[in-house]
Image 1 (tube, rainbow, N blue to C red):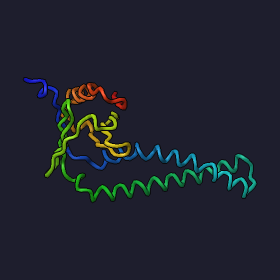
Image 2 (image 1 turned 45 degrees about the horizontal axis):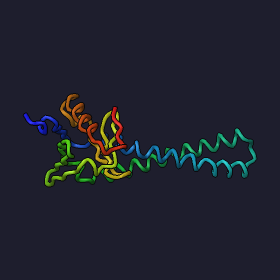
Image 3 (image 1 turned 135 degrees about the horizontal axis):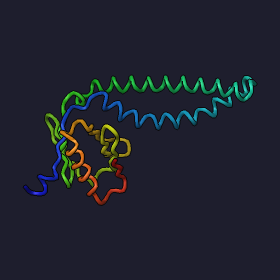
Image 4 (image 1 turned 180 degrees about the vertical axis):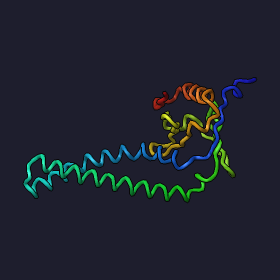
Length: 172
């Protein structure tokens, strides 16, 4: 058996809404936290100047309003995300990834694309999936349940570890 065949890993499946939501949640929560911290200051100042209730009363009202706003914002984003992805044909069709030392193939029903490893921004391994970043904001999500077993996941990690050009690779 030659080395390319030994170091080829295949992962296939259909990206479910649960997998896509987990990826979305990781990106959105960081942004929501930053927006929330930035919004705390003006809300606190407005309430403190408007209703001279003291520091504790103003802080409590500010935190309640902030929590309600964050919850409403999160629910709106989640609803929009679900609607957007239910119409996405890429979520309905299955996908097959073939990972090799020089790059990976992404095969869908009617198309095949090849991406070389050095063109990626980075790779991040999460508990349930891998994120292969094409840009800072756009990633290919490969759930671990796409792989046939733990040995395939280990082989995939080895392929990733052998990429010398990357600084931005985080594996478990």
